[in-house]
Image: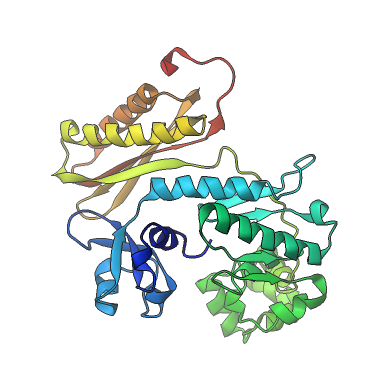
Amino acid sequence: MDYFYAAIEEREKPELRGKAVVVCMLSGRSELSGSVSTCNYTAREFGIRSGMPCSRAKKLNHEAVFLPVRKEFYTSISDRIMEILHNYADPEENEDSFEQTSIDEAFLEITDRTEGDFNLAFELGIQIKEEIKEKVNLTCSIGIGPNKLIAKMASSSKKPDGITVVNPENLESFLWPLKVSKLWGIGDVTAKKLQEMDIVTVKDLAEHDVIKLISTFGKARGTWLKQAASGIDDSPLKEREGSEQIGRIATLPEDTLDPELIFPLLEKLAGDVIGKLDSRELSFRVVTFTAINSNFRIYTRSRTLNHTVSSKEALLEAAREILGEFLSENRTELRRVGIRVEGLQKRKGQKSLLDY
């Protein structure tokens, strides 16, 4: 999806179109205390980027519109989009054909549906774009390639609202001229080390001696670098059931270590989490408590339950126990607290007493 959070805000408030829109994770302490979650392309023209302090973004563009993140609302829209995308993927008979990687991005396997024809794949991509636009009124950018690596990189080639096809015949002409830092999976540290080896473009990497790459980066990483530069990626799509997580975090009215002040907020956050689980008929097995103290240091404590549950009572019981243990070990007042559940599974079979 294109600048997903900001695009949703533009959709909801058409008067924002043409303006620099910045969606922020706000702490609530002051008007612009927090960091940029995402922004539209108009804001990016002023140098505003994700992760930047909102106060700095304000200095870059005083006329920008700053909005708080509405994660639950965005997630509900994401669920509708993913439902649309799922319908275009190959039937899941022998292996997974759909993989959601984030709230606004997914991979689809369409080899069977298109019989490996990249022209048909392009037509399917156009259909996907049109249906998302019609039903959700948002734009997306699509990349089509022989594997996940190329499809991912192609999806970033023409943003926003673009579609790019890279078939095996034009793979090298698409990939090799790019700077090596643009290769999906290469971070800043690896890119810097490659540049020190006079490897500037993806072509340089593809033609580099694999033995030298292995001696520098290790066997697994060195081999992967060589293959990726040649457009080779055999990684399968995988439906990530059980690895997804749902969580909420909020700022306390004041810095405190008093459980009587902390737990009511945790109870409210737990209610939000359970509401989301109920809407998707999910249960959970792992509960994580997150705390950010007045020095902005982050702590997490997790507990794995004996079996999956789905009730608010079970979530609060685990949260209360974790909070008690945490407070007995830490003496710096807390600023923000959160609760998260993982190990998600579809509810099935007989319910436990806690579900009532």
